[in-house]
Length: 197
Image (cartoon, rainbow, N blue to C red):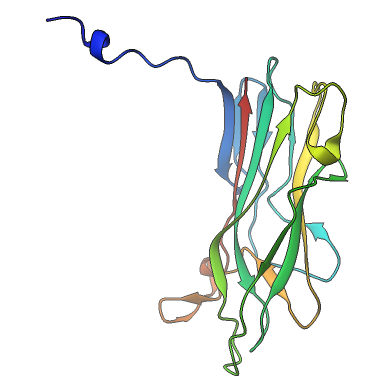
């Protein structure tokens, strides 16, 4: 009988250089490129009609050498913030003050009727962007960079559509057949950065 690897070859090496991933509870994560401290989300964030940074979404990241792509992902809970109406909201990924084209999302819900409660809650809304570090020139709006050798801040910004169609993030309105309170009234988001060669 031959070697096991004759029938099942050893997998080729991964192109993942490092992963920064965790719950936004203030933890610090050390990888090859440095130590990164995630935000600490301890409350619901109600969105206004002006764009604001989404709590927990910001990270100042410097990829390791030989990185060709940086993948950013932010997972969070979304909820309508209206009594008896729908929630409509808008989000985008921002890098060093530039809106990233292709990252725009509208998250909305259907009317809940005349029940005077915010029924719509989505457990795993997500925002993401992939940055190409092989470009010949920097074009942040199109996620392209010729080089990335110092920290760039990536974050998500969001707003409600109007004061009539309000929304909130990290919000957990209900629990076990009743209203949520205390530590159950919000959900901590998760943030991920993956550097690829």
